[in-house]
Length: 203
Image (cartoon, rainbow, N blue to C red; front, side, top):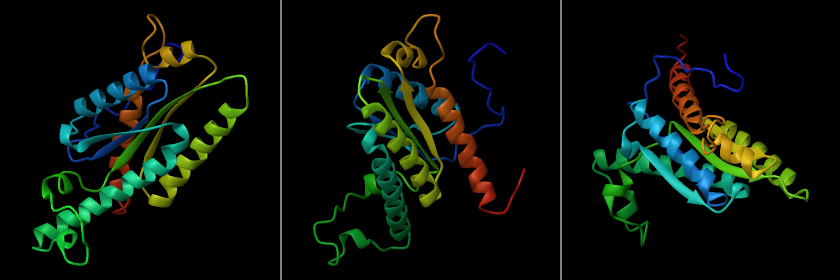
């Protein structure tokens, strides 16, 4: 196997029944955009329906943990709303919820997320800011995954310079592969395994 090549995912990966979120930062947009596109394209190739790949943008990597958590919770709200609509109830338009939206098309489009990929790029500078943000994002995303019992794929590049970041997004000829597809593989694989494990089923 060539140095730095990514391990191949199981051949049986299928995301046809999955809903996957992608939340990404605006900082280092050239690299981030390439990573997001690589992730999305791979999810679609694994069978995830386009309408079930939900992409949200935030400011920076510091905000990734709370944004990821809120995205997971929003998916659960939509899942509950969808179930209520199927049973003939619509709590979001009831008198108890003044000002709530009654646009059911967007509310029922996405249910609970099976996994979320959190994407950002941090490039080391001359101060300790890099270490603080990298540590907080890493710990925060792990905590969200464990607390919410939802797979969160760590898609934050922590690089010493911009060239390293661009290479890991597939933007440097002869450089490394775009990491996005491997994050998509991880999301689909762990989402599928988690669904089985929650039912007490092992492969």
